[in-house]
Length: 197
Image 1 (cartoon, rainbow, N blue to C red):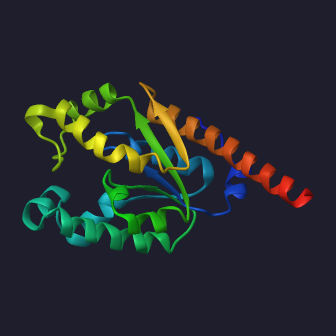
Image 2 (image 1 turned 120 degrees about the vertical axis):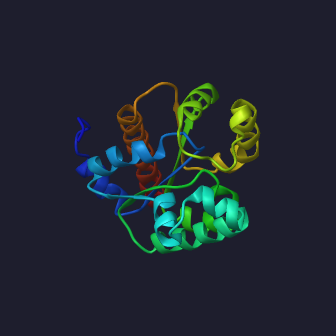
């Protein structure tokens, strides 16, 4: 599938902890996840796809017919079920971070914020054929700015912040693995220095 080398060592060091990809709609979580998955020998799950399967309805329809609150409830239930498993790369919905109870599950794994510059998001979402319930198609730029302003504080709770410009999903995955490796090494070194003292 890709040229990213297998990261057996990194896979062993993260010891089955789930990797949760968070970020705005259009940030590339669904496209990037499978590349990370393959490198680590993990499995990939897209929360939105699971919700659509469980609800037998599209996300846009759930929003339209039952409202955002019902959707967020289903999303939390799905996340709880996913959290019972391990060795997963999980692409989450953009708004999953807005419910405090979801963070209890997210923080059991490693939370990675895919953080494209705003103009990249605008360009991607203008070309996106998916219906995004929280975006005003007539004024995408303003919608994105508004949603991002509300959510940035939540996204910044992530363990890793991966800044993205125009990199491909494969390049983003390489960046994630690199930063993850550094973060794990730092964590291990801190653990060692604590035991020495």
